[in-house]
Amino acid sequence: MIRCYLPAERWRDGPVELDEAESKLLAAVRRARTGDRIGVLDGKGTAGEAEVVAPHKSRTTIRILSRLAVAPFVPRRILIQALVREQQMDWLIQKAVELGVHDIWPLQTDHAVVQIRPGDAGRKAARWQAIALSACKQSGNPWLPRILPARTLPEILAALAGVPGAACFGALQADAVPLPELFGRLRNENCPQVAMFIGPEGDFSPAEVEAMLSAGVQPVTFGPIVLRVETAALFILSALQYAWMR
Image (cartoon, rainbow, N blue to C red; front, side, top):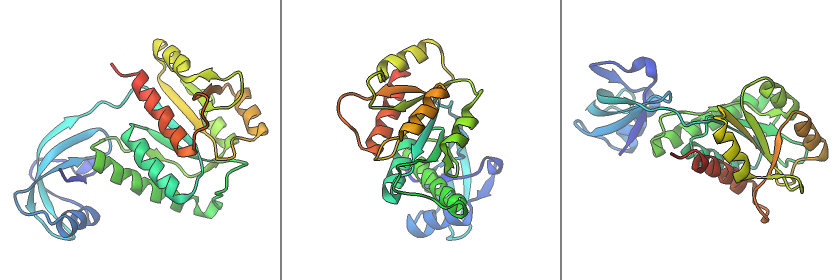
C-alpha cells in the first residue's frame, strides 16, 4: 500500500490536504486516482487508512477512514553512529528506521574518514531526516526517529549524563561483555533506554575508548568476526529487538 505523511495537527474528520511534496509523490509519481485507498502516518505513533478524494500534483485531498495509535518500541533505542560515507549512511538510516530506532546521533570521531564542517551539520541532518521519513512510509513504522546534527564524543557523553538507561559500544578489547549477556540483564532490569555507540572503520581511538569507559559506557563484543560499520549497527539493533520480543 502507498503510504503518505500527514502531520499530527492535520488529522481531522472530513477532507484534508496533503502538503505539496506528498501530493506530488501520490498524484504525479504514483498516479493515484479518486477512490484509491492509501496508508497515512504522522511520525508520532499514529497510522491509518485514507481515501483519495481529489488527486492533484500540489494539493491532493484525502479523507481519513481509520486511525490506530501504535505504541513505541521498548526500550527507547539511540544509535550513536560514527560518520561514514554518504551512501553507507543513507542505507544505514533506512535500515535503522525499519528496526525501530528512536534517535540517531551522528558522531564525529578521531579515525573517521568523513568529517562534517559545522556550517553543514544542519543541512546534513535535514537530509538524513528526509531519508528517515521515506523509510517510515516504506516500512509502515509510524514513529519517525529524530536525527540530530553531528557532534563530538564529549558533547554526546555530556548529553547522556544523568539520563536513565544504559550505554554500550562495540569493542574489540578482551574484557568486552557478550552482547546477549548485556541485553539479557538490561531486559530483566526493565532498562528504559539503551544508547549504542558504533565506531568508524578505523575503530575508536584509545582516547575515545578511555572517555567512554570513564563515562560508564559498557564495551560489548559482537563475536569473533570483525563487522563492517553498517553491519555492526544493524546487528546491534536487531539483537536488541530480538532480546525484547515478547
